[in-house]
Image (tube, rainbow, N blue to C red):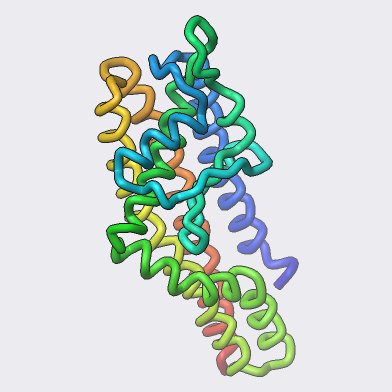
Length: 235
């Protein structure tokens, strides 16, 4: 299997898809991170204002290391802002303001917080499947390989089911992210980000969405490969 030409081609295709999506989101963010959002607030103050406007005063805000690692944790009701985003905006008159890109990222995470409060069905489903998906993306491929090598078909099938769960997770993630982006655009428009600024926010959110589309495509390709591998060794 390790020298399967089809597997090599698959890896190259998946790397190309993932690489393109990552390049697009970073290049789009870089472009709009240089454009003033018109919001004279720090990243944290902006997040707090958006949360309070949605009656989400119970949601905490914390920094998180890394670049574009911003996320909302529904378990602890915490919105975490990355170093890249937190480094923009001063909230002082005459100083550099929050960029369009940073505002879009923060608004997107506030969208997730609002989904959590509204008990969004897709967000709930994603939370439920997380443990199985984690198993599917980490251990399942090894179970498939072990099942094939040991000619233990049932073990390979268990791994295949786990990998299928990981694929389903990526599919469920799409409506979650698209929904949060829709809410984010309404947030920024309500704060006066219209015209070019709104277009920029939409571009950032659309580029980010492509990373999830890419993840779903690569998960599908991987699942189809492992499925054909397992079924081909069934006899």
